[in-house]
Length: 236
Ligand code: M1P
Image (cartoon, rainbow, N blue to C red; front, side, top):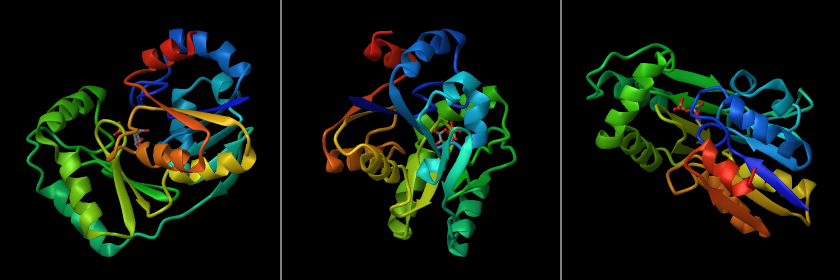
C-alpha cells in the first residue's frame, strides 16, 4: 500500500486560501479511499479554516506547525514548544524596522505557534492584495531569502526556511517537518511513502521532509507548483 503525505499551502490550496470547490469535489472521493497525512507549516486552526471538514476528517493524521503538533480524529495527540533566543527576536525586530519594502506594513509580524515562530516583515494581518504585492516585490528583492540565509548562519540552533508567500518559518534544529518522516515511517514500516510539496528544494520548508524521506527510504517526493499539479499527478 502507498501512504501519502501532503503539504497544504501552495500544494492543496493556494497560500492561505480555502481549498477550491472544484479541488475538494475531485479530491474528496480520492482521499476517502487512500491513506493520507497532512504536513503543514500552518497551525491547526488555519488548516480547519482552509480545508472543508470532510477533507480534514479524511486524513489519517494531521501534522501542523511544521510537524510540532499532531491531531488524529480532531484530537490533539502531542505538541512541542520552542525556546526563543532574545538576540533572535531583536534581529527580527530590526529586519522589520529596516526593511527596504516601501509598501504599507501590518500587524502580527511575529506569530508564535507550537514549536515554531513565523516571521513576516509585511505582517500577517495584511489584506490579500498586499500579500501578493509583497510577494512580487520579494521575488525580485529576495528579502526573505536573505533574512533566512543570515539567520541560518548566525543561529545554528535554529532552522529558518521559506514556506508560503510572505513569511519565513523558524524551528529549533531537528524540529521541522523532518519529524513527520520518522513518525510516519514508525507507523508504516513497510509501505511506500509519497510526499507532495511545493517547497521541496533547499531553503524551502518542505525540504527537510523531502530529505528525511530519502533517508528513511522507500519513498518518493513529488514537487508541485499548484493544487492543479496534484490533481494531474493523481489523475483525478
Ligand atoms: O504552509 C506554507 C506556509 O503558509 C503560510 O505562509 P505565508 O503566509 O507566508 O504565505 C504560513 O502559514 C507559513 O507558516 C507556512 O509555512
